Length: 576
Picture (tube, rainbow, N blue to C red):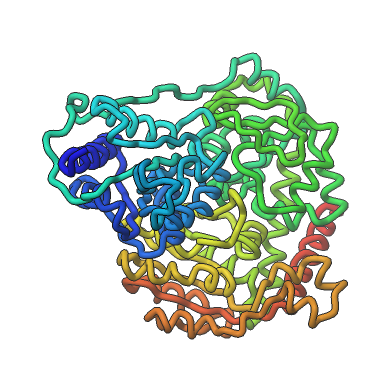
């Protein structure tokens, strides 16, 4: 194969990607990937973001996909550079996020002979891909080049398993530099080579009617990717059921059907027992809350209806009675359109949930108002409640996502993103960088993360600087792994052993880490100073940071204080 043919092959890939409405490409520098890196950079319809570290690049791509809904290209050179994408590929697989992982490779004649920077890359990511293929210009006729690329996009966007990562492994031969010749012709009017047209609809009307008639005490549990919030609340209003709304669902809005405080409410044994449903309609991803999961698992006599447009089995408690492979929005529209006599809601069922939600929200506010010092629930509640309209909040796993889920109040026009596929803290800063790049600076992006998550992905700060992203970081510094203080290990193990294995104080001040990357943070030690500090940072370009000092032991006590107050308030409200 000549250098010109190889350059033509790469240029065809870039052109077909653009025809498939791919907008972003994340490129990590390397020699073997030169043909495609140049083709991507020279394609005017693509935005190319250069990220030095491949592991960070994978998560930047993940953030771009979360923000835009389109799969970005993430390109690496060969060898261990390709391995570094694996964590992001796993997260994309578990979370159903479209991603095109493109890894340059050595050609077959350099395999298994000790050639430098050469490993077995075909099938590198195993079962964590929706589709994988080797795109070798020598082995593929030119007439197949566009088809392979277009199929890769279709598989990433809407394959049989739903959105997810696709791996394209591309052997390139030296010389790596060449000028492309005429490209193989594409479809007319710049259309993609393949288009997958199989929109999921609603289930049959008899199924919709059977669901509405299945019980009078139903709940809708809405997680990430649940469907249209407006349609979900319309259905809830018609059925007289509450929507237990994860902040990622977009359903946690000021509606009479919305319940944001499900976790603290269900910690009260009396309330949890009294509000047992006979139907559970589950839309989207699972919550992080173990309390909610345990309560749902205890509803063994209820009809559990799991809805997913791709038929994914999101049922860790194995309680699903029906599994509906349909569009959740179309289902909710059909439920909302049922005649009134087709619904048999229990009188006062929704009102009891709504009243409990109101007193819970008031109790949370009352407890936090007593704390002049910053608290982790208070940080989450302030950010969710008072960030500017149109903002995106990227939340780290571990305690931040739980605090946002448990204590974030209802509000409109805030988007919440989190890596809850594999639920790891790795890559959250880089994911936030990708989300910021995806919005192109048109909307503020704020990341809420702990000190360990910052240290784990400190390279994301370098990615942010290289790509020119504008992003505000809110770093909760509790000197270690705060979530472990809530687990049995904290009460059973002696302090030295617990601190060494679980608390893991890093001994590094996040302020020093941020400053080392050229970010000068503002340190917050009073609760009232948090929001002014964050709003001031949002108004500045580049990477800004606010560091909030908290104490791990005191944090557990604040959570217990809130939960006790919510339980007492709900008991008082229901006894009147």
